[in-house]
Length: 178
Image 1 (cartoon, rainbow, N blue to C red):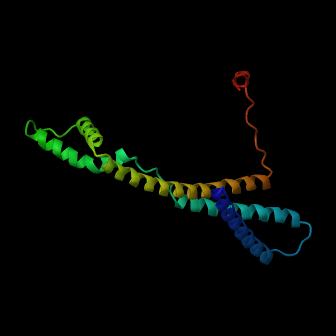
Image 2 (image 1 turned 135 degrees about the horizontal axis):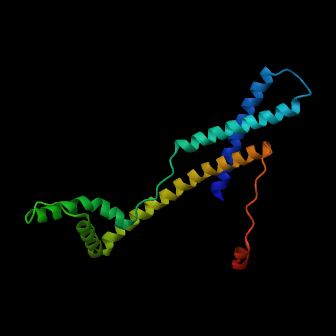
Image 3 (image 1 turned 30 degrees about the vertical axis):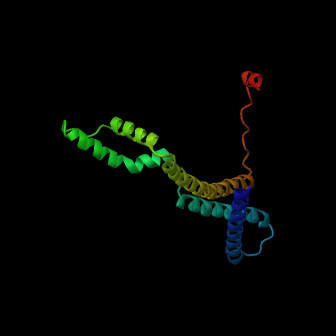
C-alpha cells in the first residue's frame, strides 16, 4: 500500500505539471472560440497525459531494475573462489602444468563452506539480510515508478476511448479444474 500511494502521488504531480504546461501554452496561443473548447480541452488533456507519460518513462528508464543480492553461499564463493583457484592450481602445478578445473574449485568451495564455523556463516547471512532489505526498498521504489507509468497509460487509454479487449473466456477444461 505504501508503494502505491507513493506512486500515485508522484503520478498525479506529473499529470498536474503537464496539464499546467499545456494550459499555459494553449491559453497564450489560442484565441477565444466557443465551438472548439470541448475538443481542445480533450486534446490538451491527452497532450498533458502524453507528456506525463513521457516524463514517467524517462524516470523509469533512468533507473535500472534492482538486482537481487547473492545468497550467503554465493557471496562467500565470489570472495573465496580466486583464492581457492590459486591454491588448487599451485597444488596441481607440482603434478602437471594444468590450471584448476571449475568443478574442483566448486567442490572445494562447498567443502569449505560446510566446514565453516556457524558464527562465520552467520556473518555472511547477516550481510545478506542487510543487502536484501536494501534490495526490497529499491525494488519498491522502482515498482512505484512502473505503476505510475501504467496508471498514466490507462488514463491515456480512457481519454482516447480505447476499448480494452477482455480476456478469452475459460474453456470447459479450465472450468472443470476450478
